[in-house]
Image (cartoon, rainbow, N blue to C red):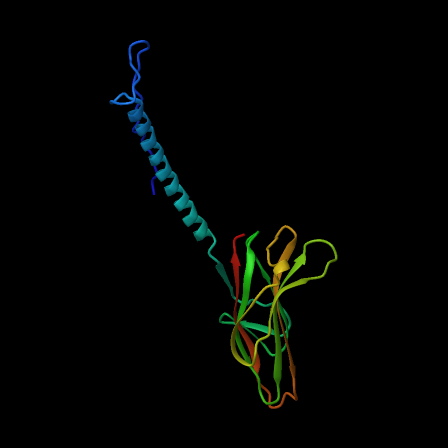
Length: 202
C-alpha cells in the first residue's frame, strides 16, 4: 500500500507596506488558517494509514509458528522406518534447532503405545535445554506421558525456561521407554510419528 501526502496550502506572497492584512477575503487570515488546517487534517489521515499498516504487520509477525519434526531418535533399541521411530525399549535422543529469542508455547507428540498381555510400556517424552558450558545439568522445558493406544498429546512449557537462548543453551528431545511384565506372549512396541513445538516471536 502506497502512502503519500501532497500539501494543498500555498501561502500568498505579501508585499511589505502594500498588502493589507485582513480577516476576510481570499488573502485574509481566516482563509490562510483554514488552508493550513486542511493540510494538517490530511497529514493526520496519512499518519493513521501508517499506524494501521504497522498494527497489521505487528499482528502478522506475532502469529504462533508450529515447528513439526520427524522423530530421528538416536539410541540403542530404536529403529527408523518410513518416517516413524519404533522401539520395544530404550532411550532415544534428537537435537532440536529453535529460532533465537522465540518463546515456546507448547510441545506436542504423536504416535502409539501398543501393549500386550505380557508387556506394558511406560513412555516419557521430554523437551530439554542444557548449557553450552559449565557443569550445570539439563533443564526440562516440557514433558509428556502418553497413554496406551494411539496418542496425540500437547504439553505446556515451564515458563522460566520457555524463551529460546541459543547463545547459552542447546535444545533436544528425549524419549525413554521401559516395560514391565513377563514378556509372554512376545510382541508390542512404541511408535513415535512426529514432534511439534509451537513458538512465538518475543
